[in-house]
Image (tube, rainbow, N blue to C red):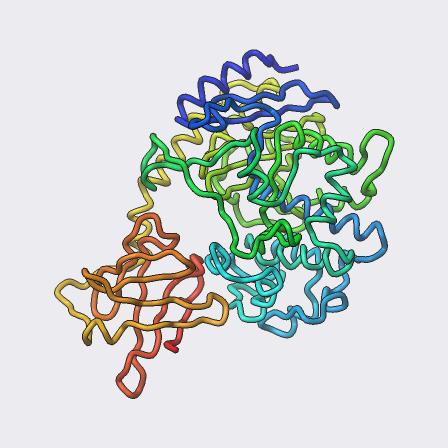
Amino acid sequence: MADIERIRKMINEELANWDLPSIAVGIVKDGEVVLAEGFGMANEEKQLASNPDALYQIGSCSKAFTAAACAKLVDMGLLEWDKPIHHYMPWVEFKDTFTTMNVTVRDLLCHRTGLPRHDAYWIDGPWTRKECVEKLKTMNPAWSFRSHWCYQNTCYVCAGMLVETLSGKSWEDFVREEIFEPLGMTRSFFYVEDIANDDNASVGYARLHPTDLTGYKKVDFLKSDREDKAAGVGAPYGPAGSIISTVNDMLKWVQFNLDNGRVGDTQVISEENMKEVHKAQMLMSSALLVPFPEEDMYAYAMGWFIEMYRGHYRIEHGGNINGYSALVTMVPDQNLGIVTLVNFDNGFMTYGASYQITDDFLGVEGGDWNNRWREIVKQVFESAPEQMKALRGEQIEGTQPSRSLADFTGTYRNPTYGDIVIGSGEEGLTFTYNKASSPLAHFHYDTFTITDEQHLLSGMNLTFDTGKDGRVNGLAIGITLEPSMPDEVFLKV
């Protein structure tokens, strides 16, 4: 057994070293909770100390709940892992017919449809959950079906719609009734309203500046205009990342997974299908974040990342959403589960602490994981300007736009991403997409740069195009954030 006091000391010291407001940590070992504790301030304004019942958003750790919900449907005889989803939802289409006719729920849950992330459209977007799934038909693939792994949130929204279609309930109600309630997860929710109005809830923070390594500010929740708790309507992206929970509740979830779907003497989801959820389904060409010499064999299961870590099969998944980061880690052959929840945007102490705790239970010294992860974050921040510069390409000095700036203004539309509005301000052109606006700076010729550092697409270039009639008729922008993809085209309307 690891030294729990040593772990507490490490967490307190590293919370200060990372300069974060709080972290809540839970550890279950051999069926017993050996640590469930909060460190730091969950809400600095209210002086609310973090604690194991404080609410945190878990972001993409929600994906494993969607996979488990699908496993429950398989148990109920309503769903088959490898039956094409067009048999269940014939209205769902992909851009190519072969994918449409063959994609299964397994494909959706292990990210092998050939689609890149295509995330920008749904962040602060106006779409309903069904409209998000309908956009699969217009999304440009980057790879052929089942040939490449790429994380894809909309496919999880589609899996959530499958849960709704087959159960006749909302995804939220099905997960609550079939997972939260049998597990006794009484402090787990789906709506921003639940965390915003709770007396024992954290608030989210982020760095003052995207490249700062210290200091932070409070940030707003990611709140969808379509979210309406009273009407039973959740966030459109819900099945991919809307769950709110606590360390105490998440430890129940971890134990449930370590026990392969069993709670006490009750088999809530069959052992066969829980093992299917945990089994490596799609090999990844490299680690999602950073490859380490202690790791080998990167793969994705269904709602879980899989690695061999120091010779042990490790199951884990992280989550990030406005102002929050989370990580759930399991080492089944050690009967070990770890939960780390941080009220901080891209708060990688979740990884540093979880890896260090894992080593403590494995009896391994020298990992130095918090310092290693901090160095990685530092390198990423420091290299970001150069990477963006490389993405933009070499600037040609001394050029001018081909026409007056007023000719570029207007609304430009893309079937997946919706509308970009180019306006004019006191200092030149402005760029507005999904509520967020930024000034545009001239780069060269008819190419301009999005300059607001807080904008989702900050630093990216867009290039205007001219039609045969000599008028501006479109713009192109690498909004997919996938380097292997051509720019998405928006046509002037």
